[in-house]
Image (cartoon, rainbow, N blue to C red):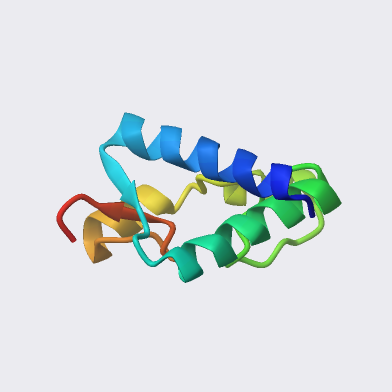
Amino acid sequence: MTEEGIEEARAEAKEYAKEKGYILNVDEKQLSAVLRGLARNKERFGAAYCPCRLRSGDPEKDRIIICPCIYHEKEIEEQGACHCRLFFKKGE
């Protein structure tokens, strides 16, 4: 994966977090690992699949795990962060 792909993933995550009132993980090491996973999946599979979830290989079924995945809002509401620990509630 390229540095450009990682920075693109960062910019997209940052913009989405801003729109939704979330913040990105403040732990840069953990944040970078998730962003690298998103960039790698986009490069390999054509979509930024959540690196913390298993793909089935069926693009139609796997649409729900393209970041931000279908599960993230409920996870953030209940746990303060999504499963990947990419997005957090403000103040958590």
